[in-house]
Length: 183
Image 1 (cartoon, rainbow, N blue to C red):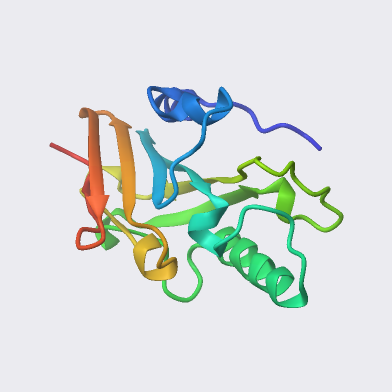
Image 2: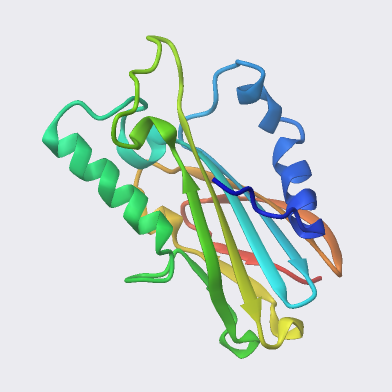
């Protein structure tokens, strides 16, 4: 498997997600059910979104699927997240910006066929990254996030934005879904 080239925006995104609470899971501490972390980076005509979510938020369990129903649910989650622009979009940018999806990558090893069962107390996350090219990046003003509609177990989305107009951090709760991309 070839590793993707790290762009400046992806490095900024990784730093944003790894800052503060982001390192808790990596250090072996429990992650937070109901919460999703999003990092949004704008660089030139590229918009990159990185997401980290406990599998419980998406499926209601954090282990390899055991039944046919769980395998179908896991396959549905992976398919939905790998095609965020199909059906009801998970991420909607200002139409005037003319953004199109270039790449979607989703990693959830415990959900892949042949996955080994996780340890009893182990928590599993899903990591996803999305790259968009925008014809008019200056028109990017907001990002409408459809994750609350798609996954009812999500209660909060912690968003960090890095772009040409600076950095911002916002927490969305169920009634809010828009992130301001410019100040």
